[in-house]
Image 1 (cartoon, rainbow, N blue to C red):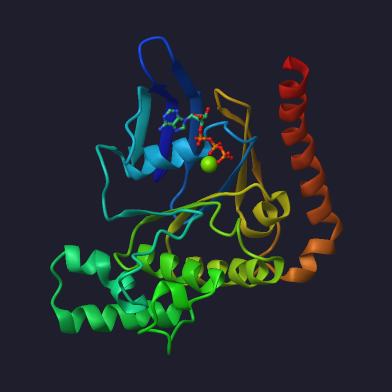
Image 2: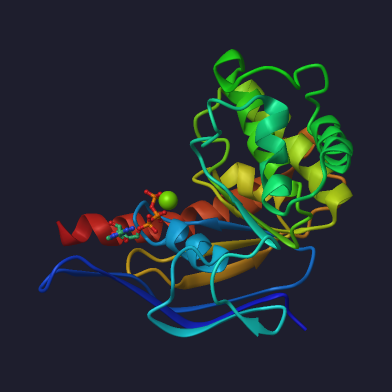
Length: 260
Ligand SMILES: Nc1ncnc2c1ncn2[C@@H]1O[C@H](COP(=O)(O)OP(=O)(O)OP(=O)(O)O)[C@@H](O)[C@H]1O
Ligand SMILES: [Mg+2]
């Protein structure tokens, strides 16, 4: 039994009468509950498109997309998405941002407090509850975005290059945090990244996409023990995964260059 099942999925963006973009086509991917899957592929191959389809914010043109055996018919609090740009509400404090999803569900104030405090603690932001986004660093804003996404206890959390704009050290710190949060929240993660080493470090499986129209070219199981540690980065198994995945991604870039 799979939690996410995409079969022959296709998304065409219509931009006027004659200009259509086929973002993904013949896209097949199956993800088990509580798996951590990263998606890697050339720019414009349809990674964000796939996450948007899973979130329900975009609608597929053709093919099947099932979550928990049910077709996706629009957004659902059981699936939350975190974008590269933090997209926090600038006029709300850390607590206000985290509580947003609970307000929508009309959860009473006292209960909201209790839940938001637990998630603020989970992402390590206790003491910053009353700060506004402009008073936070990039890494802190991303933590708020993750807490906000987790607050409704989603089954699936979709992360679209969440650490792309962070400096290397903050990024490494948040990778480890994300693994801890994933472990504690017991959710299923789809994680888009351009960094192959990040994908290997975090994932149970790495899905390599072809250039546009994107499809899953290969799904690689990362057979490294958990908990993952930073010293694994230099192990020969880690390097071998990295080398192999880089080769697969580069093939797609070479194809693109050959066309020019
Ligand atoms: N709303 C939209 N309207 C029209 N075309 C779109 C839209 N969103 C994406 N596209 C097109 O669909 C294709 C896939 O885009 P998508 O954003 O999914 O790629 P991506 O793999 O996430 O790229 P990147 O790595 O640069 O973020 C691109 O050619 C893009 O121009
Ligand atoms: Mg994208």
